[in-house]
Amino acid sequence: MLNALGASVDRRIANAILARAQRRWLPLRLVPEAWIRPLVKPAATLIRREISRTAATAVATVGVLVALLLLVGGW
Image 1 (tube, rainbow, N blue to C red):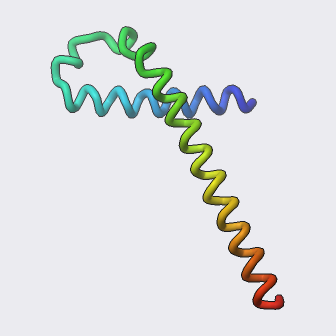
Image 2: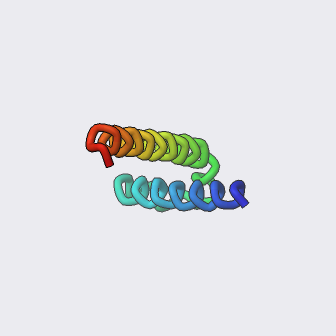
């Protein structure tokens, strides 16, 4: 299940990277997407991992702040 979710997110990120690259470099539209996608896939995986780490860090920070507020506030 998680593997399928990660692959789905990777595919969506790869599609976004590919679309942006094709908008910026018009000659890239002449190259078939099947040739470009394997080149973009490692970058999409790295971006997904970075987004996951950032989200986990943000959630942990908010959790610590809420815990501190509860301790200091005496709730």
